[in-house]
Image (cartoon, rainbow, N blue to C red):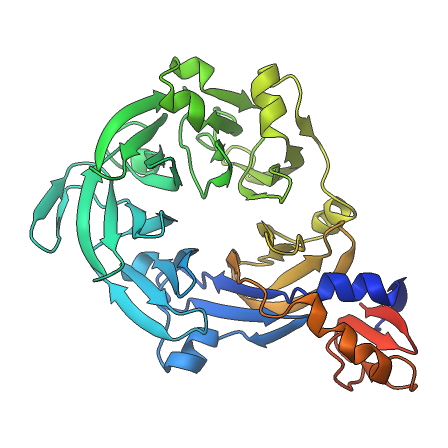
Length: 425
């Protein structure tokens, strides 16, 4: 593939941006029941490893990783769905512990003291440190990160998915996603749990079935996707105002339903949501997509008549449209840099794509099968570390990366040459 070289900005601007190092952990789901989930570690324009967990711990990650979350400065949790494991690691990748008491686990939330995780497990039981619970439907587990043991649990709806923590409460989206094969209906509700007591204190009925996937959170607002039933009930997005829920307002005043899918969604640093919606129909056997930016404050204030734009920042929309199968979207909350993944055929290596904070395309990298779930680590260097390299590495005719290391511009990324910044695509 022919590389292209483009002058993108002045040295000072590039240093200010890239002084905040990009460190991304990406979970690749692999193939379901193939036990081939992997972790990609991406840093400063380079895929360091596409099997990072195995490289560091000399063991497999497990089957179908489903979510990743940083609990505090020293601990990260990963939900390994089909292995029935919540895997805990340090930010350097070393495994700390694994909790195996939450079968068919799905999505994670935290208050910094406990990890909370939704589970499809039903008609089953599970053990805690001093208690045994049984559930007819799905549930939420509370894991004490001091012991990595199950501290408490509470039943919610069938097949609960997205979970968020806000003002001491957990908001859990129920799907009922096994309705097509089990003797229960799709769910339409969000369960609200007092995190301290692990008791359901309210159930909000959205009137929309199958609240599926990871929720993005911007302050009090949640972005919840519904794919419908893949036949006649269309996909939509629910914007939920947690403050209105906790204030006790009627259900219909707590959310707005938007006629778009938000299959893959993320929160921007401005408190907006970016969403790539993927609709699949069993009737036509086809996918249709929508691409939107949501201002949740305007959506709630206008009851949905304002606050949605059919656009993404910069060139993201046209770039994502070129993908075979978009499979994830993410904004680094520390730097504003943006990412999306392409699953391709779902059976071979996918792609990781990167844009800067304005939505200018930077490049793409090969990762692993079904790359889906992101976590940005905090920067480890400040902009003060970078300018000291300027005098030695900007005018001697050599090529350098943005940390002053002599290099050749072979890979996609940003480079310094004679005092100017170039990008290789």
